[in-house]
Image (cartoon, rainbow, N blue to C red):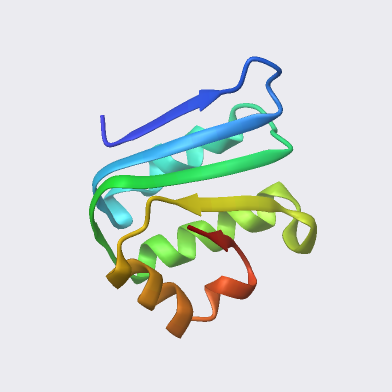
Length: 99
C-alpha cells in the first residue's frame, strides 16, 4: 500500500506515510486516510516518497482545509532537499511545518 495511516494511542495525532509516488493516483487513498476519524494534529511522512507532483500539493491543501484551515496543525517530515525547495517555491512553508 502506498498510503498508510496510524493514529497515536490518544488518537489526537494522525501520521500518514506516503510510499512511492505521491501523485493523483494516490488521491483516493490519501483522502480516506484522513477522513475516517478527525485528529488534532497530522504528520505527513515523506521518507519513502519517490516522487511528488502538483496534484500532491493540491491534496495537501485539501487536507489542510479538512483539518481546520489556518488553525490546522500539520507537519510534513522527512522531506528531501528537492521537496523542501518545491515547498519553499510554492510558499507551502507558510502553510505547513516542513522538516
